[in-house]
Image 1 (cartoon, helix red, strand yellow):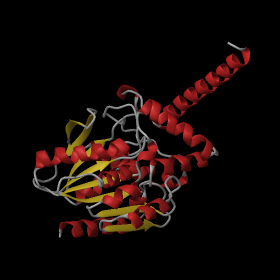
Image 2: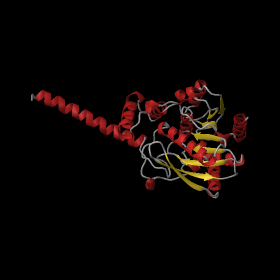
Image 3: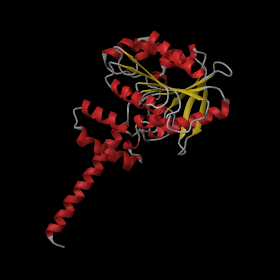
Image 4: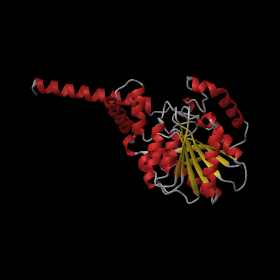
Amino acid sequence: MPDFVIAIISVVGVLILGLLIGSLYAYSQAFYSPKIEKRKTNSLDFLDKDSYKAVSELMTTLVGQIRTIPFEEVTIKSFDGTKLFARYYHTKDGAPLQIQFHGYRGSAFRDFCGGHALARELNHNILLVDQRSHGLSHGKSITFGIKEARDAKAWCEYARGRFGNVPIFLVGVSMGGSTVIGASAYDLPENVKGIIADCPFSSPRDIIKKVCSDMKLNPTLIYPLIKLGAILFGHFNPDSFSCEGAVENARVPMLILHGEADSFVPCEMSKRIYEKCKSKCFLYTFEGADHGISFLANPEKYKKAVYDFLNYCME
């Protein structure tokens, strides 16, 4: 074999190896979750920003309240056999059920400290979910709402089988918001009456590229490597899902809430989802609220939006 051919093969081999190593690193940073025993289960870590420091004490108090309430451990298997975990809080026989989904690398207690309190105030029963690859749920890959949306459908089917025809509301924050919006594209049980999404991102691609820009990385160059890592090691394509696409098939009423000062998921993403939604949809934005803390920033406006939406869905 001529030397130049060997040289070309060697160069190509090095490039392929470099791509594999780079995509594996990208996968490990964006999507990989360690085994359950190595996770920070229900961590109360807060972002080191003034907007979060201002509410961290209140959030810690609310989380402490949740920890005092008795619950039942629930597990199911999702569409792909992944074992999922949730905590069921019973308030009243026959009451509406909220199924709550936290955000990316978040925790159920922290992300729903406000939502849990609001649900209790409404006398709703609560199924507080650990999303796949988080908390006590199994899985090693976070898929930014792609497989999680099908998990939400599985939880709805479990709830319908256990509780019968009680009204079900899917509620999500951040990636959890995208999860419940994604679930709207599927054939959900008829007693799923509404979806509440707080600060959802429009698609995995959009939020990943946005975060790359925040990190001073060129999204055009970096995103293909991240996508390759997701496909090779996570066995999913982040381009295969968008909330804007999902809501074009939605039949369930939807409430979208978003902080106007959201520094992680731009409020504009919720506006785009709202504009595409084919079902009845309501959008409320909150002045000065950063990511995921609209309820804490303006509880009265937030509560009224939720109460009005629930009344609309129950008419």
